[in-house]
Image 1 (tube, rainbow, N blue to C red):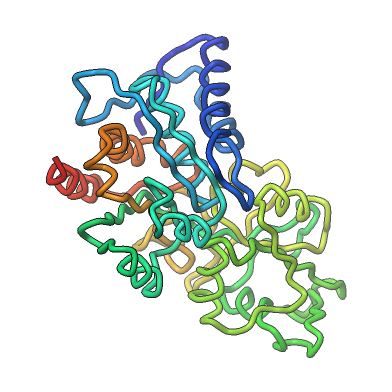
Image 2 (image 1 turned 90 degrees about the vertical axis):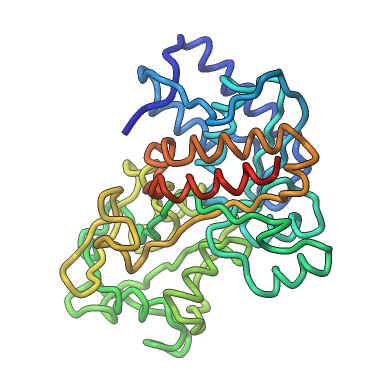
Length: 352
């Protein structure tokens, strides 16, 4: 995979990171939004010593200024924060790209009335949200452009000391998270899942309802059946990592990117979808690959009216198409085919 970051010294890298923190910190975001620090820091740690830089397919003829406001999915955040970091460092240093991570639903709630230029989401926009857009005078496909950024693999993670549940079937994972499947009070033991496993209570964790990851897990994986009432659902993914890393009997679900950033603290469960256990990796995550059962696309939604009114928004949209497939791997996502982004570029060209 082609690396994109110019060779720089440590001083330059620190300066870039500080620029992203300052820019993102100015956003009027809530519900867990922060500066582009955690995802960008992880990406920066991976990129030192690599050469090359992403160049937008549509370079501007003059310097731009202004602000691009993005909020939404915590899963998508590391990728979008990395793109924003590189854009401000190499493309348009006078444009402030503010990246938040309130969660997919929270981001779209801001996007619908026009508070954002982009809304990141780890699940497709819902019919009711499309209806709300229309109530605000925005039509999908005309005023709102859906962009698939990459593929993510929903990853089940356990404590490093857990040496029994390193491989599970898809059915076992679904059943263990279903309310009332094993006990009326939802106090489920590992031995309930498979004979010979410890007679210890499973501590269930996951992201809360603000996140598209929760909605994907509930709607697609659990088929909209009630989740165990004992599940501890959190806003911040870093909190989930910490909780699982400290409890031998814990299990949680979130995007693959957060697992690969914490492999020293967590173990990923290999999932058997019917043809043997499959480990989530960049080589197995994809709609036609071995980890397809837990694969999903992740998105950003662009307000095309703002892209037509504000040159910096359109310029950044072009850059997203160029940088997303190249930065996907280093932030824990499997890239989309190039043909997908070629079609999106055609749609952006029509906005000029």
